[in-house]
Image (cartoon, rainbow, N blue to C red; front, side):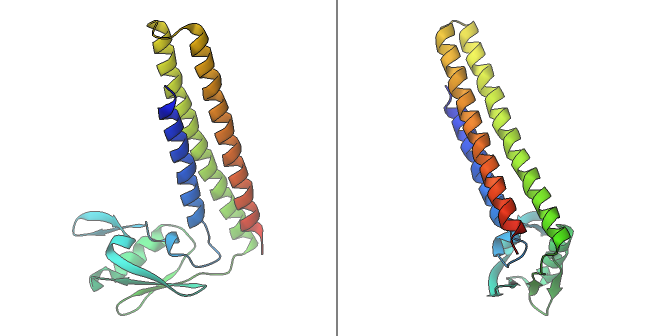
Length: 181
């Protein structure tokens, strides 16, 4: 009965981990830009579907689109994403030099990380609410006893508390990582 909530909670935490891996604004990482959507031929698809992304050095990402007409569209999409990146278009590629992080950018990145954590917690709360409804319906229809329903509720709350604790720990770790010079 709690399997769906467990799956949603795992997905929320996994999604947060993925988003945090992209939030590395002080060193080059293709994950920072690979999922940015680019419009071509009437469809929006991530950059990784249109181009190869490579690291030239620890501060530079090179994007080589397979269709050279995408160079400017990719650069525009990256600029509009508000990641403090300034893509430079070459004849057939896009280069991104990762700027040094200032104190203000670090503080802004911490705010972004906290917003991502809050989003994950919303997913967890929604999973709890959905599972709570299922438990209440089962109890109302006499499919489960009140004692069993209470046990499910306690187990559900424990899962939610553990997930929130894990999200908080991940956020603190990311904040330390961001503020580290």
